[in-house]
Image 1 (cartoon, helix red, strand yellow):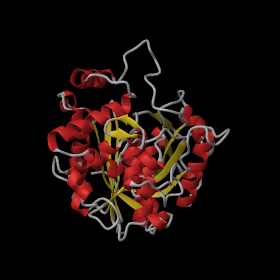
Image 2 (spheres, rainbow, N blue to C red; image 1 turned 180 degrees about the vertical axis):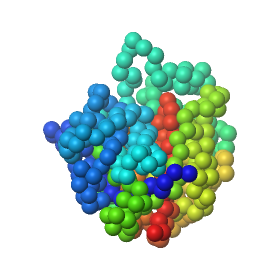
Image 3 (cartoon, one colour; image 1 turned 90 degrees about the horizontal axis):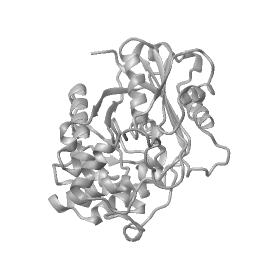
Length: 398
């Protein structure tokens, strides 16, 4: 076992519709989130020994260009790109430097400056697309329809769940309704509008059963976290704000991904294995978790992830939805931030925004979003192509 690692500072920008803030470029985003995280930790940038910077759409060394807004100290800066799990991958790298004794204090930062509309295809047309196996398998099993690729693959996973287990479009729509309702209390969310279940269902169909209000939007934004060792916490008097990372795991694609199941194709097996590893590391279980930020890129994926993480038995995720078990007053509060569906999804920033929300929840500083007596929080971030990162946080005892 390595050393204990703590989150001592977090910060994020408001997530925005691409182009909504004129002249707002990724260095500006990084300066805002990074400065907030450092101020939250109460330390200067010069204290940071290594930085991991995540983004999906950008040029090489954009991480340096972003971090240089905080200072020019000559430290190693690592550029991270792991699709939608990029932010959590940067977080994991920063944690491992501290855990392994290579640094006392590190910074994980993620940003994205995106184009409006659905995610487009690969940026290069003269080489293999990293997602070619995934979409080839989808087309073998389900064919290809006239809808954007991302909602199509996740929508098809939802269709499989309905066919196998009897879940319903209404159950998926209820997840969208919940997350939009939660976001009304999040000043960082791209959307803070509340919709009725009927409005969610009546929205434009993107790929059945997914309507527009069940799909995460493209977004601009940034988020950051300062991580450190236990010695650093004590030396700087940060015990009252430190949150311990009790377990963390990344799992990439397994043979199950390509076994013909759409549910496996969108990463449910990766998520399950990562969750199992994290609970084994921490000695805790899903029943100990009070609050969860999970990767609801589409409402179908939130339901699938309930089952992958053990919140519900296989095929029973819809029952959890119908019982209102994943909102305030239920079994566990899932996506109090509004999730990706309503908070927004700037790919490189998402994992660190999730980290920020869980940190605020466990500190008891989440204002109107606060989950009562939150002591253990779980974060789930997945990227197709593929990587699932699951992180467990807890209030420490010093």
